[in-house]
Image (cartoon, rainbow, N blue to C red; front, side):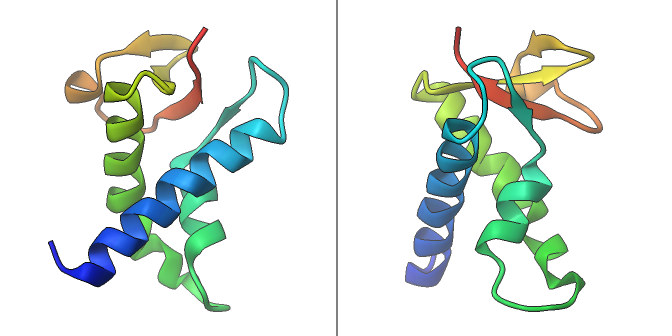
Length: 90
């Protein structure tokens, strides 16, 4: 991982936590919200940050900070396929 990739990863993790902090305790966010918060452009370039945002969420799951959900239920990050949501651990 390059230094820029590490910095982007840390920014995505912070963005996830900050977005969740601004919402209610049971609120969820989409990884795209973190990608958009970190992306520094006006176009759809944030889309390249979607998989890095999902990886950042998985790291935060490992750290015990958040959980990944599908259909409102927590799922194991490795088993998640398709759209996911992120929320603070309960």
